[in-house]
Length: 241
Ligand SMILES: [Fe+2]
Image (cartoon, rainbow, N blue to C red; front, side, top):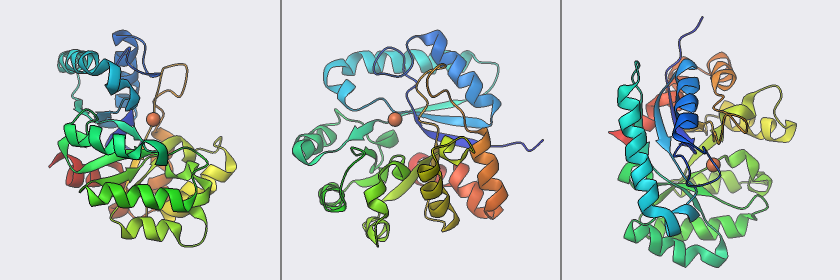
């Protein structure tokens, strides 16, 4: 059996703060499940809205999770980020929250895990991206395969030209995935435009941390060099070192 090594940059693993894990025990089960599939480094990325009212609780529960992971019989590293919801109507407020650190970037880098509404149009996305870039942030577009309008004409190229990086969900590469999302994720991957895989795991019974089939797909259809970059190399390069 192939041994994988992965950094999951998108997990709702901090208990009791958003619609992700409910309890520390559930978070521990999720981390164990991820580890068994090859995940060695995790970015805890609560929805940004949670940081407005529950910033202290997030910090507290993040520290608790870090303590817990140290006690595990296996090694998993945990870093903090946030899945930052960006909409035209709230972008200036969002930029302020990023500047003050209320919304954490990925491990305090210039990279921001950026989420849009599903029906975002290209003009709106490019406007938001240009404002983030103006303030020095590099958006990592979260589960980019779920924004169909961004796949029209050359929009993805424009987004990449801004210096954005793209994350796809590992489960979008599973056979059971929604076909359109699978096609979009697959196309980007084969064109080597994807930088990161994430699980976007929420709970054990709702979007559990399932990355194995996605990793298998990546290693089967891409060069080893590119697969390694997507699985862990880019995370090390941009977000950790
Ligand atoms: Fe998410």
